Image 1 (cartoon, rainbow, N blue to C red):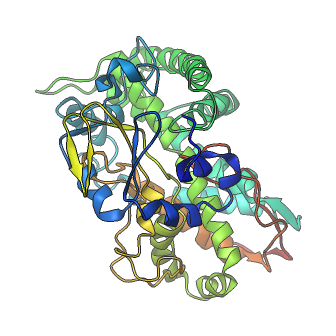
Image 2 (cartoon, rainbow, N blue to C red):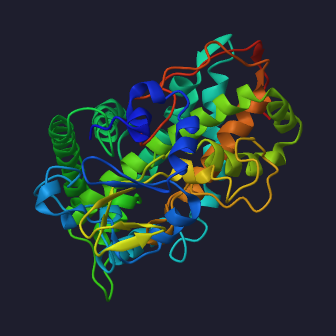
Length: 409
């Protein structure tokens, strides 16, 4: 996708540092047609309506031939349920949720709190003899990746392998400024390698099930049937990538925002209960996902005074909608005490992020402990370097100087 307008500047890496003025410019036209036939929707009310509209498909196989080369997934493999529509989406999501949350395992996430706190405590303890650290490298990345490895039953020693594949997939997903065909080839290679790895892991769990999520997905069977091995692999791929990539951005972007607002950081240090509102405001103000995967219009859809034609790709600019002044008062102000904070940080509709409870808890624990334990933290460079992806935006590194580390509780 190559665009010379506002959206093109958002996609260009120069827009990664602060895309929000560009989002404000984009919102002056709630629906923006692009040169390639796509439509970008940037205002809150219109985004929410489309997230709940059954005429909007998440299955990119519904794209017409003219768009056959873009974002169509990886040939020959079962798509993850995030890229499916009801009823196929609903069946796979329901089977996954039996092992991840209510109603099947309602206390799973909250029951992980002591373990999550212990992981973060260990990571921050490791900084005790230092006065400078990259928060991404030392906390924001290793924390959620440790958690998702334990949940899925992925050996942590394999982390460097799937980290490389996951990063490649994430950085080639969604609208981008570089060559679409080359991005597709890179994604194909990484997705093939990751699927082969998880397929081998699934075979091993099928022969000798454990108490992990992959084993549960493989062995569960009820009146509506279970998952095929291909469906387990696609679901595990989704959980592995979504289960840590987005949370890394939430924690890293959250710490960056707190360091830019030292008065809020100090309040959070004094009042740990403020972390709940802080994380909700971060999901609005600095969300980890700026654009979800491209959607497809299954029929002509009129939004305002624009008709999106059947078959057209639709890009939902969630981060722009989160700061829509027609939805939220003083949207450019970071306010952890904001009331009725309805945001698009986890999307919406049938594809609302089912990992939201875990991501919230991880961010609350990580940011709460960093605020409490780092003495005198301050940014080394502002802005920090950002990851290449415009869709999943977050700092690549976050160097912080500090005067020491307070003891754990």
